[in-house]
Length: 438
Image (cartoon, rainbow, N blue to C red; front, side):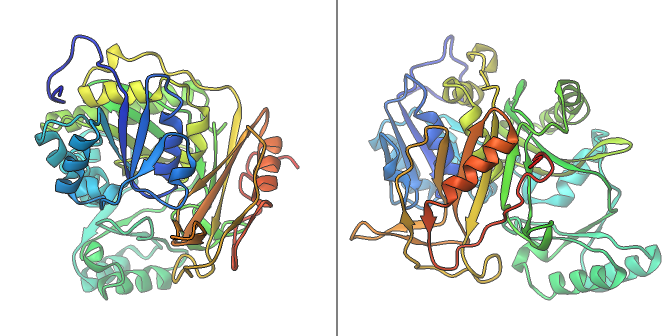
């Protein structure tokens, strides 16, 4: 078994992959990896109700933070590459445990994952590397936060310092809302994630997500995507993990993407290196395009969800080899990643009660979809012993479609969703309103 810490002369064969996680992002990754001609089988752990519907994909009943169970599974299945999807196992050091066992892993160490797992750590790194980001303050008690607010006399963005499953952020419109968000976090609303808060200046401008696949020294950028965080149409309602997305987001042309690489991503990778962190995984930069130029709102240490579902159908069959090269630290040996020149759209179908109290256990009816330009990725689903698929989470399914322009891509995605039914199903009808003409 090749050791992930040794740089190979040429990339070894890539036949068996393991994707860790059970959401829509992991379903999309598994689907994309199957397009690599070398790959024979993909295992997903724990997977979801749709995993086994993908050709040559199998689910394994191992928890995403069960490092010992994952190592055992990798040895039994002769896994050549492990790709860790969610942030929680990365922050918990699962990639470190697997690498220590000699496995080849795409996903940062626990130290690198602090980019996402600690907002204050990420802010300190940005200041050090002179990366453009909003002014901020870190507070450790409600009284400290409220005192600061009293002094500043303007609404702020309130962020739980730790991992809060994409729900730990309040973009307050008023002083009262800011104060309420500070009190709520310190009252335990986000558990240990909210024991420390980062309070930020509000920035103005459109948001865009950029993903860099990194090998510790080098990187390759994916097309920019735009996500829709609010639950309701017109960008109203509570923040969610994401209700839909599209790519490539026209907000950033090639020149804009190059600027983000030079101003944000390369200095970030360099700052990580200077801290002794060999970052082999995705750096996700959530950016706001302000009048002063791009500013970082947040970093994530993994593919965004649902942006990943939107992007995967645009990726060429080389993707799996590119991630393998990142995991080995030799991106210069990877084949060039080709990207389809089409538009990709995705819409999330969520359960009733999402994001606060999603309902589970509703039967999902799926009609067969003959359209090759559409993909239905399962997320919060579970397959029962009788073969029926039921809802098992807040974001249940992601309907994705590609077409020559965004109007056609979204029309197709919504037509695909019409083939899906479950009680209480909710989705936004205005995803991609920024790029749709009709």
